[in-house]
Length: 172
Image (cartoon, rainbow, N blue to C red; front, side, top):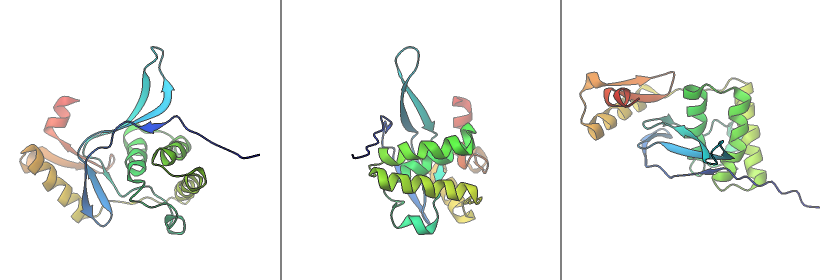
């Protein structure tokens, strides 16, 4: 008997991101994750990581990282960071979604399971990465250039791990 786990969850888009150095990336578009469920009207339910989210990928311990490449699972990191900071989901719910997100990134079940266990361990031991000052500065400059904004129109939200602009605040 072979155990097979399949997920209906999928990443609905592949947003443009910019590498900022030290393994950190900045999303230039929102990331939409279809959780594989439908609402009352039959439409897919999405979780969204916002534009200008900063991420260093999935928060997994070094001893699992050799099996779960950050390069191949960067979308997981954006989703995880958005869920923990912006949507304020519980640790367990957020980490649980990582199993489906890992498989949506193309990982086979056994590697996705190791990614999930790695993220769970990281959560349980209190692992949290903070964006270094030079990464934040680089992200702010990129956003200013992209949106044509002045310094006083852009700020870093540490709690949300993203860049906020007057333009974004007006759209919300």
